[in-house]
Image 1: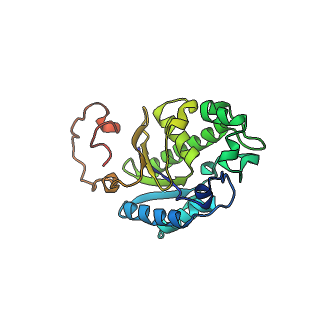
Image 2: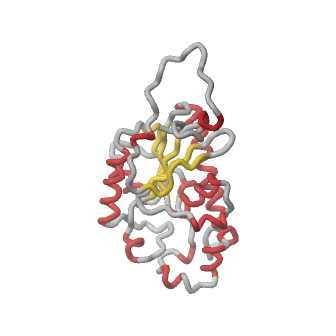
Length: 234
């Protein structure tokens, strides 16, 4: 199956001020712009079969700086969780709300006032990446690499699904601004190849050069053929 790169947008003015941006049109700050430019250097040379983004401006700005030659496809399934009336408020103030401990310790039960439930966010985000990954694999082949730019909680929910852990554990996962997380789905199970990578070399994720097919393929062992071996994702 194809290889998915999950890119979180760069730092925003809300991140810097300690606020909850939600779906508000919050933009990157100077640090976020520098982060986006830097991650673009790391992504340089990777032959991306597709670039997909949340519709929010902070993700689109990140891709404009990181991958200026790309024409991203907007996917509503990757939009930030709808925090409802919490949006725009400071995290310090929200930490005093009765719902806050639920969000942190039992997020699968959290429903934001006038907003979305975290369970609904996780379900539509996972469906968005899994269905698109299957289409890209069918159209571009199992060596294809593609990128989706989204938000912290969305990426954490996708990672939790890939790890096979309950949504109530997803707050243990970290997805920093401009970080890259890599997942490879296979017919039997997903593999988390990288998590919250903010500085590693990504060149090894490029598919190998195509070789002429042999009449008889060499046998392979166990999970190496589907992503479990060290050389499965190069």
